[in-house]
Length: 232
Image (cartoon, rainbow, N blue to C red; front, side, top):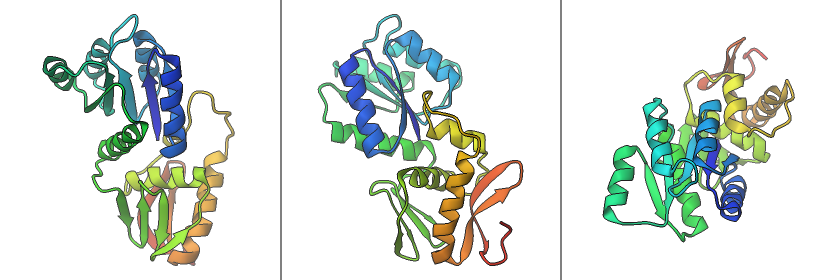
């Protein structure tokens, strides 16, 4: 998952980014003012935006309104030092999905972000079931037929994204855009490497091919066939 944090307090922005990277395994970009936040939001596809209300250049409410006016539907969590009823109503009416009042607990922030990330993909339960595969987005544990599958952090991130988009065709470009931030070093076959590792680990236990390749288009999770007869 890829998250944009728009926050002008540098220490808070770095703390939020760090905990989302460590506890939600997200790729995170940071913008320090409203104009930069809008630029980032228009330059990439984000699964969640964490938006401070009091920002220089453009405040959070202005950013939120413009973001929604442009037709962007990523979930938005607003951080605000103001919890007056009128402010909350304005935020929700402008398209905010949730808000947190400063100062806030970082653990609560992570929990709210994870919930919004799931809901943004149409999921409400933290446990996603795909045939014999279960992916738990809270514990970050994948199981096949009840057996835990040991995954690297990046393998888990790829699998979680495919699980949240299960049944849909996901291109390599979409995976790259949602799993890496602006600073990642680009290697042409990195997604293929992770997909290969996932197949090796999942298929051995499942006995079926869980991740299907549509040549030239991408991958889909959920169309099962015999692992022995599946095309490599």
